Image (cartoon, rainbow, N blue to C red; front, top):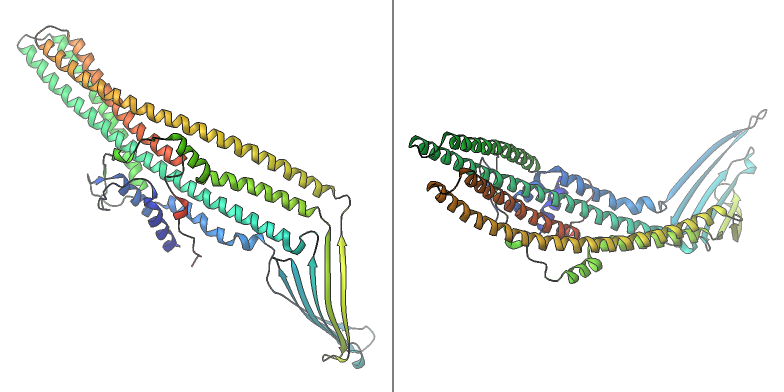
Length: 472
């Protein structure tokens, strides 16, 4: 089992669309942990991945459990008969072998029986071999083949769903990393703002000593400094919470206390032709395959229900040998053929099941059609949101540039007595908010692109997942 999980995690860890240079796997306090190294460590250590991938193992037994058993069945019977009031007795015993061939529906059976009567002259033995072939319901194994096809469809759907679950969890881990990085950047921004406020406080106190600033100016800066410290403490707590979640995800041990690295934005290329990407998604994505399989499954279930409407008609042929004693003394030989028919009339239940299967097929067609349309709309809206977020990031950067110039001018004007301290404080606070906004918008953009890759099934490619291996 562990060997299977190690092979699986190694094969799928780097299927997501990142290629940042790797860092060592051991992270002492303050060691940088890039995104891809984080995901690799999570895949190697986090048992949630193992919990997801272990669902592949039972799939190899689905066909065995679904189809009728094709085992060779051995039957042995023995009996001793004692007649009351008669000192003599007799024994009976028999051996039988039965074999079903699911692919054709053919059943082959053979038997041997010996009956020792109450008198030595009444011993009898019998040998028989027979072949039974259905020709209407399950004609030549049709029902079994439909059952095998249905089992294969369900297996394929299950494999896709396992890949979906793996991809969803991977996306959640990447989102967690982005939240961690955002918390780190916010804490850095708040810490720098707090240090700036302390310097401003020292400056204003010095100005007060020189009778340039008023006591109320000192108090205003003190309030600003306390507010920034308050915000820094809150953001530090948020960062520590995110760090603990990261450490849980990688099952950190010992002194591991990593810090995040800035994700490489070069990997987030623009979506130049959304119509082509949506068309590719509709034709060859994992989601499209699941929807197609659901429609195929519904059609197969209709075929199954239609097959059950047919009568059960079995042709049989065989050979009998009957003789005395266990070695067939004075034997009688016989060949036989026959037909059996079972046909419930009017068979309301099977007709009802067939009608329900047709209704379910129609419901599946409507559901998959609506799902395809809904996903197309979601992707178009997500694309618009991504492009809008890019524009908002440019505006946020522009606002920071402008705010910096305003703060610089306001500081100069305040030092010359040309402006009120309140105006300076407002502009400084506005610049700080613009910085926080930029961080949040950049992280949101990266999350949106990961969501695009998750929805279009390119974050993880299920076809590269290794085949499951039996339990050892």
